[in-house]
Image (cartoon, rainbow, N blue to C red; front, side, top):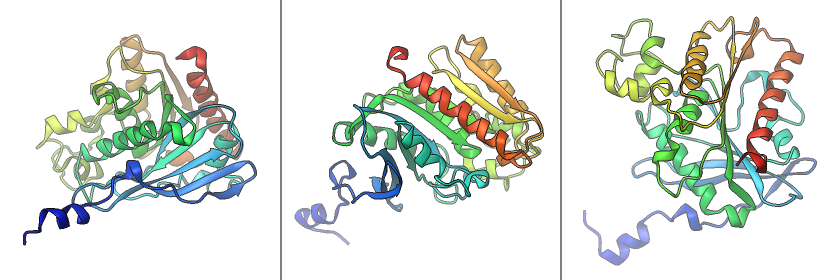
Length: 300
């Protein structure tokens, strides 16, 4: 089937950079929420959306936190920071907005839709969208921290370590927070020849069969001296992603001369399972404090 040029132009998807923003909801005191904002329409895939949490009365251009959800790259919801936070009122993103941040929570293509590097390409496009509409939204996109949990922490780290090579449309990243994140996928694999694990589905084959792609998908192998500072939080009793994954990333960053604050959370399993509520609050407070420090104007 072929289309006349004029009709083909009409059928092309709209550019998310120019679409009107949705009306704001008011989910918590002092907070506005723009829910389901399209930021990318990949060819042959569903449109990708983000939620944007904003202070209701901002004081000047806002620093930005981009929160990347987990779910083993296979599932997950953009607005879900993990089961330890689902009962919080107000929720963690509202709290971050109340603390003076713009918080973007982007969806990305899952491993059943596309393999690496599609996921980090999508998140890079989200950064570019935020940068392109920063004036309209009241953002200071040059003060951006990436923050992710589990598979989202892996993607946040991978983007933080490669954002400098993605062109002028992607703003600089001033820090990265990872919670219990995979960092070396080949080392993570119990059986590198198994093509049915979550990491194999991400890279499109058994890690042993696609070693170059597996290495490219591993944040540990992208560490350079140009990386932004990191805060790495990992539970000592993590039975899904061993804490050694976080330890090795922090060690590589430090060896490259990059500030890396490693916090091993005693007794915590994956998703902060088994951690008392007060300790979950402390993990959140540590991450908020790091984000404040990294987006302070004097740190730019």
